[in-house]
Image (tube, rainbow, N blue to C red; front, side):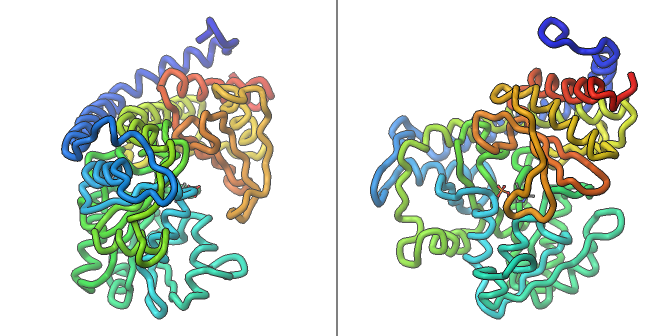
Length: 421
Ligand SMILES: *Cc1c(COP(=O)(O)O)cnc(C)c1O
């Protein structure tokens, strides 16, 4: 690295030591990469994807074989009955909101069982902001089961809440919190317990950042519906936009009616020139997710050696691609982000600044220099400017460049006099 960047020798030494610590975790990541890569290949074969599928349609998009094939590939990869994969989902929040509005009706009770949902969902539900157009305004009731003090789900309270719920909502990833991400196994336990209480309950999972990290997905462990973003894991860094919903066929149909309109559902929606990138993205996703995971594990080991508190630890099991580092001060946090920005292939020369991002309730600083605007499967760091000044790092299309970005973040802190070496 010293050939191309002017890195402090002490940081280079620590990075070598960090990489030694990573050996067992890297081996586990490589095993899952191979398993999931072959799973994706098998899904393409099962769906019989041909060159014709890669070409899009215009106008109404009736009989779009490429769109149907992509749905089939995602369904097979996720072990789900059905999937709805569309470039017209503008974000993960949009896919999640479509799923919630798709299956909930006035008078139904939605229970989030992993505490507060991801910031952007609060306005969708109607627990923040004016409430206009929210689920609450439509007469959907909402309750929240808090996580236990150690950040794990409160199984007893969840079981109780499931009795009256129409939808049990589980967030797999940590989001902007310091709690651990949930494993597919734990999601399965929650789903099973909820259905024992209430067989009609719909178990829905916010699967953002979790896809292809483990060998199975929530839809293979009892979740009825899940959704996520294509500019995160399952887009493989190639899909330029979009989201997906996957799960039980009857529920996916309801979501399709909400996405377009009742009576048309999934039969319309042209794909323009978007299909090739989405197919290529899911095909590459297992390898890109592995690169992102290795980058996260490396960051955990490296910042641990630098004396920072990190979460999760380098040797901890992982079920999402997020790494947090507790920087301790707003200055160090901003320096970290400036360093990550310097390690970006695009816009390496810009200086990230905190701003009032729509949907978030405190100022946020983001470092990202991505081929796809806002894509957090590419190396990026985000942090709300609030205690304890934790920064969340995610992505990395390749491990060599992800690792370089992480080292540059520490180099930036050192250059600003915020790190003693
Ligand atoms: C990214 C994310 C979302 C959706 O965010 P968008 O920016 O709208 O794609 C929802 N939940 C979690 C946990 C996320 O990480």
